[in-house]
Structures are given as structure tokens and as C-alpha cells.
Length: 250
Image (cartoon, rainbow, N blue to C red; front, side, top):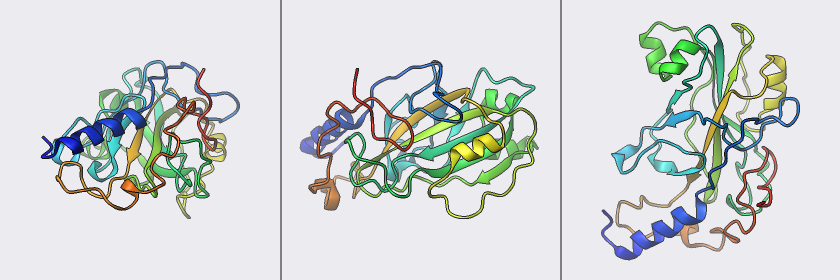
């Protein structure tokens, strides 16, 4: 429980302003290897371990999570995974160092999109049961960790982070990604390895705070600065495609 009622009210306002609307679309592809920022009709089940366990780390199509509370990679479950198929899991930040914060109508930053986690050759059996890298290791499952998990690193106030699962046509001998995690060419990657539209997806909004809201200490810096949600997403709460600001509400 917060020590200060004013702080509780401020955090409630934050949750209302930043949380995204529930979006459900079965088809996430609107062109070859193009990702749209929505959840599949049955969203991918994703649950993060939260430091302090002050709240649930389970995400639901735009759930807000505090950056500093995300301890590590989540458990990812795709209940409809085919046990005879292998899958690639991808986590991407489409906003990166934008000059503002989602859901404000600002263009993505020059670093976007950023790859935060990519794992290939996950068996459908393991994915249906709930995938973590530790579980794969304990069970002796062979996976391909192409990009180790990087926790959110938010420059301003809030960024979106999407998790996508793609069915592979076969077991893949992936080449090392190398280089920077910034400006990730997910279209080229998906085309190279013949990964079509995601089978399941989900996303959350990571939020930066200067101190933990559970500490009772006052916010400072950009938490109370001029950049804090200039427009509060006026007419821009519908998630857009990677590399574009949010589209207008319908």
C-alpha cells in the first residue's frame, strides 16, 4: 500500500492514461512480413517475473508494467502450438528513443525497431506447456537463442513492447545476428527464414519512473517534466504498425 494518498491517485491517473484499449484481430499481417501492433484473437500468454511481486506480470494487450520491476524474461505460452512444429519467438520495441511517449502522436525514434529477445527452434510441445529458457535447459530441449533477453530501456516515459510467435517451416540453422540490437530489420529476418504472419502475439507498455512508486519517495526529473504525455494520446490510442505512430481511433 502506498504511504501517500496523493501518490496513489497519481499512479491511478498514470494507469488510466497509458493503458491501451483491448484490441483483438485474428490477422496480424497486412502485407509480406509486415507486423501490425495488435493482439491475435487468442493472445499469446505472457507473464513476467515482477520484482517485489507488487502486482501481476501477466500482460493483456496493452498492460502497463514499470520498467524497473521487470526482473527478466517472461514465461511464454501458446496453447494451440502444434507439437510437431517448431517456433520462433520475438520481442520488439517499435518506439525506442522517440521524442515523446506512447500513446502520444510522435514518430518512432531513430533506433526503432529494437530487438529485445529472439529465440528460435522452440518445440511446439514446450511452447504449449509454457516456455522459458531455463525450462528448455532442464528438459534438454535444443533451442536457438539468437538475441538474449534485454529488459526494457525507456528513454522518456513509455514504450510499447510486442511479443510474437511464428511457426517455422522446419528446424532452422540460424546465422548469428551480430551487430547492434537497434534498427532491427524484422521484415528481412522473417523473409530470410520464411516466417509468415505470427500465430499469436501480445504487447505491453513499459513505463519509466525515476523512483519506484512503492517506495513512498517523490518523483523527479522527467516524471514531472514537460515531456510527460503532451497529448495523452488524443485520438491515437489504437496501436499502429511497427515504425509508425498510433493510428486514429475508429
